[in-house]
Length: 171
Ligand code: ATP
Ligand code: MG
Image 1 (cartoon, helix red, strand yellow):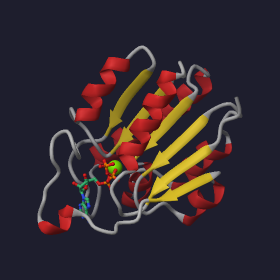
Image 2 (image 1 turned 135 degrees about the vertical axis):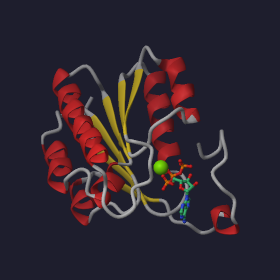
Image 3 (image 1 turned 180 degrees about the horizontal axis):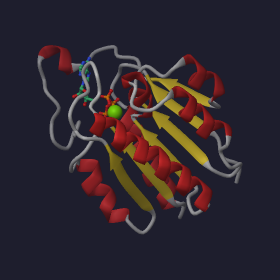
């Protein structure tokens, strides 16, 4: 089956949720999925949930878990670069039907992965691989090279009323 490049960006809720939904649907069809999660670390509920699909879905985290403000640490960069290396390795292994680059747009914005590296991965995607890229503030060049782009537009978010991320709902 021919694979396409999908991008989920924008300020509204639903980007990560969407990537997880796509992964579960793919697993339902017996497709094999690799999820590389940038920025984040730790047992988010989705990490725990996806362990139930471990025969088909592999999730690896390449973040330090610290929110990157200003200059990223050497550890943030090292971890993200390891993510890029493994993504390239898993793409060339040919054993996955879908690869999700979770929060990759944020990793580019933070400067822990280079835009050129992400564009290079997109340009050299095998024809039968579905590539899913998430994260707010997608670069215009990423949008240009994608086949499908959805912007989650915030109409309302309870975050603005002081509601922090809740376990099982946002994390
Ligand atoms: P979800 O994981 O629920 O699908 P998302 O992937 O679309 O959401 P992100 O942009 O990755 O959302 O946001 C991660 C977290 O940042 C959210 O779960 C929320 O707690 C917090 N957040 C949401 N809106 C804002 C905001 N306007 N400013 C700062 N933090 C926010
Ligand atoms: Mg997200």
